[in-house]
Image (tube, rainbow, N blue to C red; front, side, top):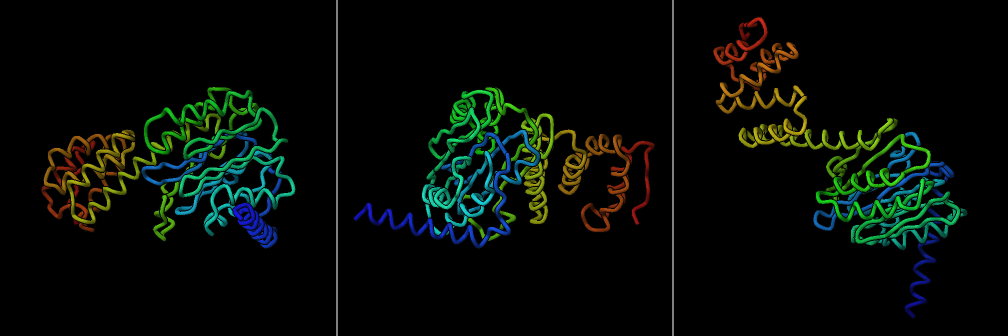
Length: 343
């Protein structure tokens, strides 16, 4: 009976997948895109976050390979790509299928599974991966606990084992671990053709119903001589701006101390960014700590005098105090000691 029920379920899923393929063929099917690459799909069991990270010698790899939805799962579809494995895999997992069931159904419906390489993970941490027998060597995958690494058209067969080792041994959050996996792949030889683009996509484990909040991180390097290093830079920048956003929300709550903490964290991650320093300084003023703000304002004004003009505009919208003595003190550290009356 168990075998019969399992077979019936797979038949049902295959029929569902065939129907979906037929319905979406005109708008979704983009077969045989030569996106040979290495990637990782993974889930953080503590936070529940799920994600995909990828690098390839192909333009805009993230627009084709990476798929993820909060409360559903994540998919990487590569090699001679059928893009529909991404959205249809998510459709099936959203309908309650496991990653294994979703992948099996789509393989049954695919006329050429032998040229595909696909990995999926669902919200329970179930992982499924497939490397077709006609993927260009070196090619292979490893399924681990809450993750899968996969690669094809690699310089050697050490790439995906190196990815596994890096993911398992690297501390940090999901982004840290997936980036380490990509770096390990490149260090082991990487794509035989070289480097061009990279991407990372991370979603929440549970959906809030607000897609703009459910996507924790979505960054792409479309074309770059060192895409992984550039992706790492953007991840750091993303984290800095997350602190800025939290600081802004704290300001809205009139929690100036919390805002100062968040702006300071952002500035530490991206010290060369003048805007982060500026809002840090503004928050100090609003906390009654104008003297502490002056060194920051002085540095900012020396590099770009447009910020001097902005200081004079902010009292009008209640972002700086409507106290002429305070504004004059701030402007006193500007180049040429620019002092203008606050209107």
